[in-house]
Amino acid sequence: MAESDGFVASTIEHINRVHELLREVQRELERRGKDHDASKLREPECSLFEHAYEDLSVVEYGSSAYKTALVQARQALDHHYAYNRHHPEHFADGVNAMTLTDLVEMLADWKAASERRPGADILQGIEINAERFALSPQLATIITNTVNAWWGDSEVTEEPPPNGSVPHHGSDHGLSERELFDAACDRLWGAYRGTLEGRTLEEVAEEIGLETTHVEHVVHAVSAMLESERTPVHPE
Image 1 (cartoon, rainbow, N blue to C red):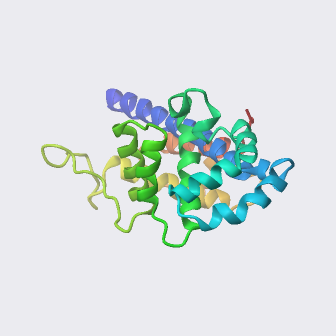
Image 2 (cartoon, rainbow, N blue to C red):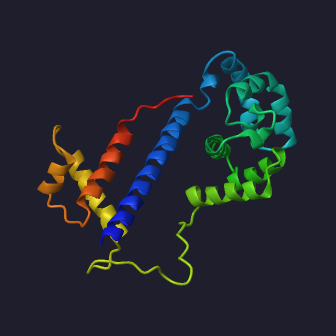
Image 3 (tube, one colour):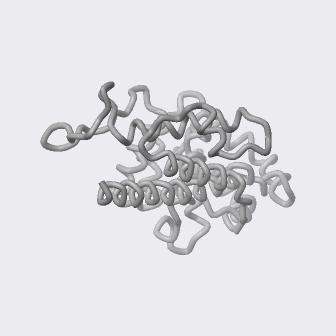
């Protein structure tokens, strides 16, 4: 039992750490979303883009007319690229110098831009941009997979584990230990957030009669989740 406790505690610690790191990524993406294209609303870009907007908004993406419009809007674009790292043109080495965060913002930008053009297709846009920015076949495929997973018509399901299902020690209801743990965390999270200030997680867990083998680990996990919510954002 002691070995099992050690494994469970170590696994929960790992899960909590991954959650913390993903929350850091989430906060950075939130900041990126709020600041996206803000330079277009300031001078000199605002006046320059207003002048070029009509031409850029009506031409087909990737067409010769689009490329001509880009040349005419070069002054605005040069300034915009210089101050916005979600564009490959921001870097001397293009996409190869970007981070995953840059790529996620870039993809959201591509998707939103495609929605502004009647009849535009984000997947076709990816094909055009793969050539335009010299994307590797692997990266182009990953971007396409992401579009299909996030915004496609069909739901993405998890691949089944190899060699059949993974055995687990479940309850009488057929739930695995991980599922029971997640359910306990969700229940304590919801109950705690619905209480008045000044209550501890331990008090709430006892009040709702939380039944799990590892109550202390559930309390620790929910505490880490709450702490990550309170962590301030540190901009670049």
